[in-house]
Amino acid sequence: MRALSLLLVGIVLSMVSCADKLAEKPKVDTLHKFNHVVPKHSEVCVAATEEDIAALFDRWNTALQTGDVHKVSANYAPKSVLLPTVSSRPRLTTYDKEDYFHHFLENQPVGHIDSQDSREIEIDCNTAIDTGLYTFTFQKTGASVKARYTFTYKWDGKQWLITSHHSSALPTTDAPPAHIHQAVAQHAEECVEASEEQIAALFDRWNGALQTGDVHKVAANYAPTSLLLPTVSSRPRFTSVDKEDYFHHFLENRPVGRIDSREIEIDCNTAIDTGLYTFTFQKTGASVKARYTFTYKWDGKQWLITSHHSSAVPPKE
Image 1 (tube, rainbow, N blue to C red):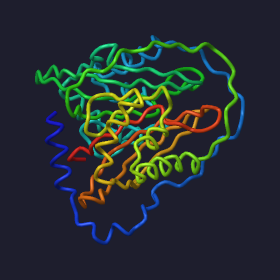
Image 2: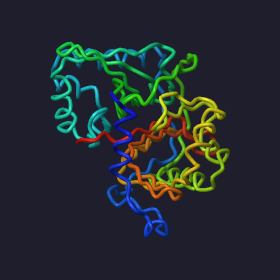
Image 3: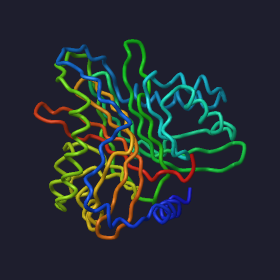
């Protein structure tokens, strides 16, 4: 995918003089209206295993191989976000998703997960995350492309559907750590009250930690069991040490982030914030746009990041 080259091109194209911008406060996102609140409630959580969640990729992949965009889009919830590998435009509607897959399916893609050790599956109350590395082989051209993925799923009472799908080019090659298996039994759960404003404020908390320059304060935003897929490293960061190692280098140029556009979904003790953000680096004056997916979990006291997937914006829509 020539990911590093594309990223460098994107950075060069997006560099601007920020002499007047350094004094500005991060802009407020005006493209998303906060109008959704989930009250405190109880919920019956469906039983699910890692095999159940892993099979959802197989279902999606099989739909790809039919060549039918309607069968592919049927895997997505009515309210869902697709951040594709080779398109900079978030796909929110069924029409937009089918438009993307119409072109993607032309070369007859067949996907496979690179290995079970390259994926992490987390299951919560009626939600699940599958994130890792996959490869597409295009039967029409013979090309093979590696990428990173984050699928988030929600149980709608009858089936699991994709609520967020973030796919990004692989920046470099590094081996992921070993995978830990889990399963969730059917159970009842008390679901905390949450509003879109509260979830949006979690980015501000994380962004504020960045501006302290302290890697420990940044890493404190992540749950003990959590995954970071950084913009410019293909190595999944699982431990606090790995995350702090990444942020040690990232913070050197004093980044300040702002949200450009976003979609927020709140479920039982989990929430997803996905969209586009821009970082201005106060040390160099560079400005870089990227795509993000933050998944949060309520741990009983606070919301913490369980999955953070950040990727360069593809150079074309």
